[in-house]
Amino acid sequence: MKGNFSVRLLTAIMILFSVSFASAEVKSESENQEGKDLKTEIKEYIDHHLLDSYDFGLYSYTTEQGEHKYIGFPLPVILIDGGLKVFLSSKFHHGETVAEVGGNYYKLYHNKIYKTDAAGTITYDEAHHPTNANPLDFSITKNVFFILLVSILMFVMFSRMAKKYKSNPLPTGIGRALEPIILYVRDDIAIPNIGKKHYKRYMSYLLTVFFFVWIINLLGLSPLGVNVTNNIAVTFALALITYLITTFTANKNYWGHIFWMPGVPVFMKIVLAPIELLGTIIKPFSLMIRLYANITAGHVVLMSIIGMMFIFKSWIGSPLSFGLAFALSLLELLVAALQAYIFTMLSALYFGSAVEEHDH
Amino acid sequence: MTGLNFVGAGLIVIGAGLGIGRIGGSAMDAIARQPEASGKIQTAMLIAAALIEGIGFAALFAA
Amino acid sequence: MDKLIEQFSFGLFFWQLFLFVGLLFLLKKFAWKPILEAVNAREEGIKNALASAEDAKKEMQNLNADNERLLKEARAERDAMMKEAREIKETMISDAKEEAKAEGAKMIEQAQAAIQSEKNAAISELKSQVAELSVGIAEKVVRKELANDADQSQLIETLLKEVTIS
Image (cartoon, rainbow over all chains, first blue to last red):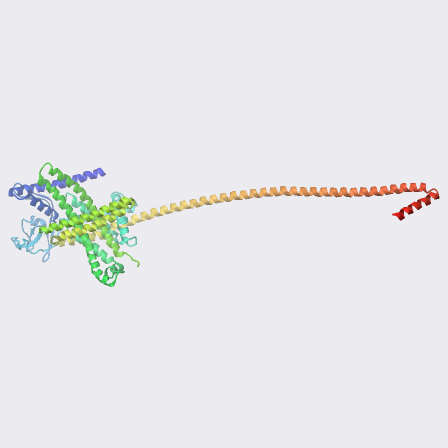
């Protein structure tokens, strides 16, 4: 089983490399004719990789005729702009043409949808930012699609696992691997931090967030390269849920400690109240930033090292950066689990402080 | 970004690195002293490191 | 920071929130609750089984202790009985000895008493026979002696003398 896993891992990493290789190389060739710097090219590629997109692109390349080819499939775009507008992202032709929907014109520019006129003109301000209006965007983007996919995967996996318990009290199949993790979350994250009395209320959230973040981080490392958790919106949503749960399940002790810290002079109480109140917001904020930054940093460093292969183009540099990238990929596997653990752990810690019962 | 921003980012990374390094070192000492408590020490170490890391990242984004 | 805010996509936020909360509730109902309940039930079962095993062990120990105690008691009782019997035997023997001794002593005493009384009787008989004999002898002597008056008066004289002297 272990050997099988490492083989699969190796294959996955190889494919990741080959995909990046294919796209980066072709681009560099086309740009070399224009004499553009390879470094900027790689930087742009990394930026593009980190961004969300409206179609599910596996990879893209440019043919010898200078025609851009995209391998992948379009995803639905949902806009609220004077009514609900739903259309497939293939209408944008990857930003090359203007999409006309219900009398409105939209253009994709730097991965953002802007409302334009029929010709697709985009006006800029001094800082080269488009001044066109952004319609309210509820599109099923690549990341949303992946969140949906992971949700379905998790639901199928865990509900099937739950069903098996009905006939047999011992875990079978995939449950054998998942049950220890569930028990770990319960015994080593929830119970020590929240306490035996209250932990049951929070188990669902802790388990869901742990597995969600973990699975989606792992898939972010896969050759599909959909890194959902490096979107601040995603981590913000997760941190917001933690914040809301903390706030709404908190007992009066928690609020007492925030607004009227016991055991300190009155003057200090007045000083501490705003600090503590700010602290309640900073805690989930740091959760959000941590997850986002770790995953983003990991991807940027990994892709930069892969990019270095194309910069060095030598017998020493390229194998070296290949080895480095390989080691870093392994590290990222650890980080994927570690960040899920930290997120769950700190959430549990905050819940624990919200329901803690002091006896003074 | 001006050049100073990069200097600031560097300082942040140095600070956070030193902090996390100290935590890791102390945790190692603690584990060496009490190997049977290594699980608890690791958990506490990870939390402390994560907290510093969070502040570090927040500062990095501000820089 | 500006980059973060610029990057923030409201649509993605909305979908993440919506899908995650949906997933949370679905999983809560269909997965976590049954899984945790099953695991809890199993752990409870194991705990109960262990507890009952422990109980059985304790019971066993109690039984063993009881047996031991009974055995001990029986042994003690037997010992006590033996001891008693021995004591009884000993007292019986010593009683018998004493009785025999007492009896013997009594018999000896009686025998001595009988001997004494026989002796006394014999002595008294002897005394009376001696008296009779001496009286008879004395009669005969006296008869013969007193055949003449002179002798008679002489004798009376001596006797009287003797009487007065004594």
